[in-house]
Image (cartoon, rainbow, N blue to C red):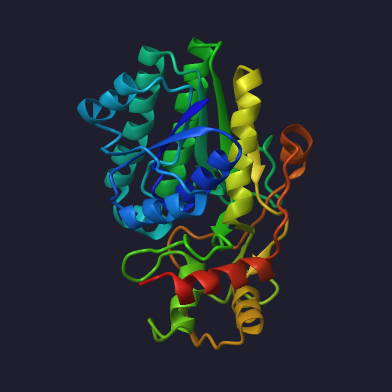
Length: 333
């Protein structure tokens, strides 16, 4: 089975390419490198020991993405393409809606035209809004607290409507929580430009001395220590969840929705403390005001993925911290 990984040069995309290829799939990457680097593809190839066909294209532009479908018999798509920073989406809502929704719409158009009947969609726990925890797939979705999350809500609705019109097609909507960690080889991991918007690369860059101090956004949430609580999942576990999802779509049509998380919440301060303990480093931090678009607590109900996908996260927070630090120390130049 040949799988197009849209946005496959990114953090989650590269790890998923590794797992797909190791599971026997053929992979093609399409990415415009707006928030990723070609070096990540080369490192992915180093891990798997083979070249990966790569197209430098804007997925939302028909004249750029259509040749990928014309030149390859694609059987399925894993759709990571999109802008992804919560805080930035509050500052740039139009850019987020325009980019994220246009990518999804264009891929749907290509699926219909080239008879590609399977897609795994990178959704997010942000679609639940400020809901009761644990978040479960059968919950009514509340309005997302930021444009990034709302773009995922709308993306899900587009794909659900697409399946209503094309009932022999299949889509898996994966609502995942907070991916952190890195490949155990230390060759690929999260490598943001500038000051990171995600917590773990921020922690690791402070620990390495690249940044002087971690900013913790708020310590007055109704949580055990006042800092935000999130469900952190190792990126390799997450990548394996995508393989399970595409395997399911090979056998079934329709729409499938799954949370990918650990089912356990960890506070920001708990994550910092664990990182310091596991890696024997210090992470200086400063408490600042809350960040727009953030909620107090977010963790997954995981039974549905366990029962239907036969998938569950295996790595713990200590593993996530250890693998992140290995990546930070040995791989980022």
